[in-house]
Amino acid sequence: MNSALKNYAPSVLSFLVLVIGAVQVAVASGPIDGVTIAQLVVLTITTFTTWLAPLIGERWRGKVKTGLELLGVAITLAIPFIASGTITWAEGLLVAVAFMKAGAAELGVQIRTEPVQPVAVVESGPDHRAF
Image (cartoon, rainbow, N blue to C red; front, side):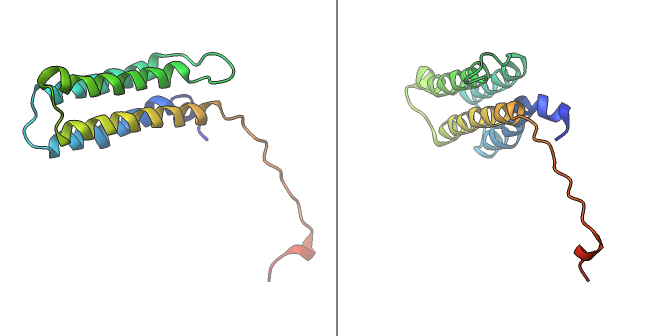
């Protein structure tokens, strides 16, 4: 895997879920109101924090990156209840997308921290050719 892509996998995957998931849900849900904008702002901020946060520790190296994404899920869930006391389907879908962003960030951490395995080269003689 490309080393630059591997290094930025958590934030790239989080960004792709943001653009493909959250923005599409917000646009498709009809008129965008203040609650939806606030949720999108939180999702955008968590994408940048995933990019800025370091990998730490040995056991669960992505605890800060994924933890900030999960904090974003909680804030994205709380915003509609603080604003109106209820949550619409579109706002609920944005919470689901926030949860998917957290999963994508953790997947990116796993991609980034996966050790590189050497590739074995097998040389065969002329009797192993397929005809």
